[in-house]
Image (tube, rainbow, N blue to C red; front, side, top):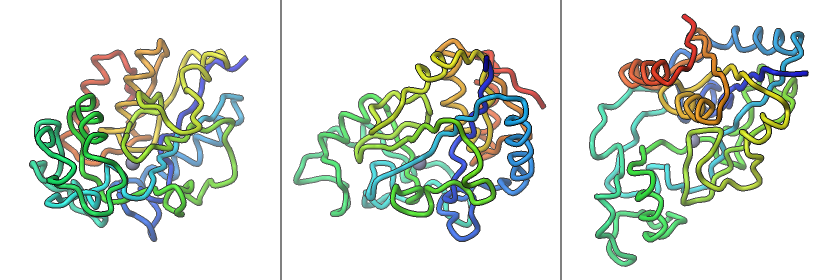
Length: 247
Ligand SMILES: [Zn+2]
């Protein structure tokens, strides 16, 4: 009986592949050998492998290109920008927008009302460069292990007006298998989470795994963050939530 599952988070070209690097996460190169070894060892140990996969439609609510007067939180190759109002959008900012008078680009595929509904719950949304679009090679698995390897996959296949960093998903994703239900059906008690990014999808997925009653292990050598400051904070937050973090 399997009681442990390995969850590689967003192991995709858009974050890593030299040609894509739409939302390049620094230090991923150092993780690559661990990922390959870990997946091979996991297979030998008989554990399950259940990756999550970031999949956005064009002109998504999280893309900076869906807005005017905004700047990306990160550039593709690759400087971290200081967080400022231009790198995020908040509910306070949009609550007075109307369908006629707003800060959406002409190409945005969601309405002002949908944006308000989303931000009222989410509070804030980072402005990311376009990445991991559903029909592009950016949302394909990173080629080193493509085709090997997984038992099930969780597609974070978003609607245009919703975003969620966690593989457990608080939004209704298209054709998704709920991860918590899947793990419970498979008798999984412990999950080991790896890859990217510590301060966003790893943090959200780990905290949700704890909330859903699973033991969570992270090896710091298996994960990397977008920004050093928020990465340190994310590790502390996860420690306090009883995520077992192994240096
Ligand atoms: Zn994304």
